[in-house]
Length: 271
Image 1 (cartoon, rainbow, N blue to C red):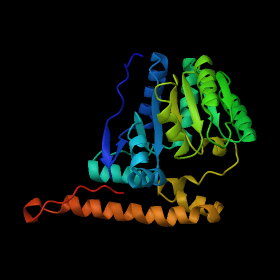
Image 2 (cartoon, rainbow, N blue to C red; image 1 turned 180 degrees about the horizontal axis):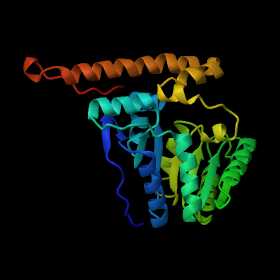
Image 3 (cartoon, rainbow, N blue to C red; image 1 turned 90 degrees about the vertical axis):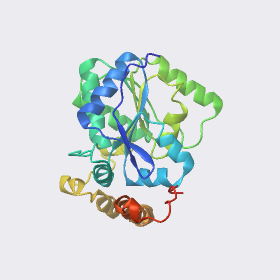
């Protein structure tokens, strides 16, 4: 494998290395890696994923193993800018990047592979992409079972993907399942793997997308909570509050003058 692509710079956000990047850069790097046959791991970090990575050592290792960990959520972008002065003007939203990558792949003649989603969602998503980008080559599309694959099934999946001729693979398995799958197959799956989460459901019309003004102001979680209160209330209550607590603590630690300290601060583990 020729490691020719230089991935975007990363910066620490609560112990997670998040990429300071843009839509254009992510798309360009994905196409470049696909053409070079280099492979790679790309993910889109929202608050939920960030809290998973700060609260679990195994998840932290997985997320930090990605080549691009783009700031999908506005609060992640805000933290990246505040603590690292990256001055990013906009987030890099996974569902939007999905469409941009597919357009660029169609223009570049790079085939894609779809992996994830319910069977009906997958078919609708596939049809939608071909309607939007008639030149797009979809080398394969499959909805895996909602259980761990056997060793034989896993080997067969890898063979199908690698023999398909795809240069890019879109995973819609949900976090952190899709990230774990991509990380565990980083040496065996040849295409660039993009963990795009809800993009399958959103572009297939199964779920609605929040209005643009809510997305710009970091209020997308309220829109999603109203859609699925029974499933999401605990996630947002606990993890949003934890994000705010981590932000406040990090801001306090960084602002505290070192000369005023009479002791050395312990390294935060966020466990």
